Image (cartoon, rainbow, N blue to C red):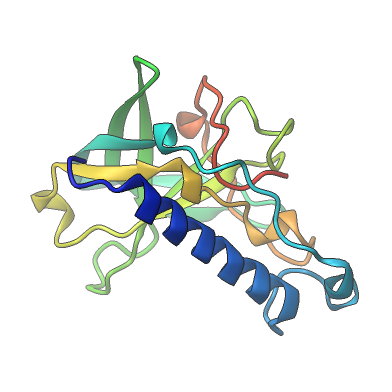
Length: 184
């Protein structure tokens, strides 16, 4: 992270947030119900905090294990655990797992990292939040990735009951407070 520029990072993060708010407020595929879009004034966010942008050691799982995930309103969905992400926050060690639905189909599918933390149901969506990690190259060739919890977002089902979203499995429940990303 030696080439990290906090001002550039903050400006890019704010730009992404503005683009998302515009999409949610105006786009036909927005998860905000059409009758509520006129009153929509943007997603609530925690202030950008570089302390929640951490380097994580990535362990690739050559033999990914299936992980069924419950959903908000429907049948379970099947993912496979393809990576473990080990990191520190405030001097304490944590792990999250990264999943894919189609790990062997050759397309560059991001790592899906659903999680819960001590803000879940208090300051953030009651069912958990998501992150997506776009890894350059093959997972087996990557040792570290940047986990930026400022990019954590609520799934579409937080905005409308018409969506069915995977719930973070218990192995991705963090015993810490992540005051970064989207608020409820």
